[in-house]
Amino acid sequence: MPEFATPFRGNKFDRKLTKEELIRAIRFSIASEYEAIQLYEQLSESIDNEDAKNLLLEVADDEKEHAGNFLYLLKLLSPEEEKHYKEGFEEAQEVIKGEK
Ligand SMILES: [Fe+2]
Image 1 (cartoon, protein in one colour):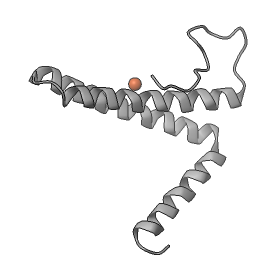
Image 2: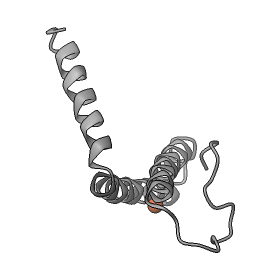
Image 3: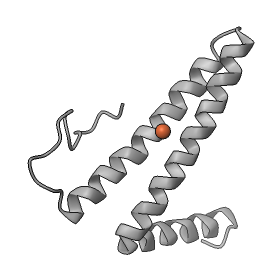
Image 4: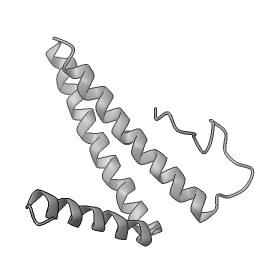
């Protein structure tokens, strides 16, 4: 799992999370999905068992869907953050197209 601090440490809180804490937990969840994708794809590339390879790659695709689920939720919870991502996309597009 990701190396940065977990918001839970295995136990539920004795109170409800604030919106900001939920947003951080969703970011952590997205990072966990990406880490799982990395693990399953790396493992599939490191073995010869075709059944295991196929299953690992299918599960990796499932994790990509989960990442999409959480990215959508993050967009709903933090529209301000979404604006920064859009700015990053546009900037990257300009650099790649040679406009910047
Ligand atoms: Fe997942």
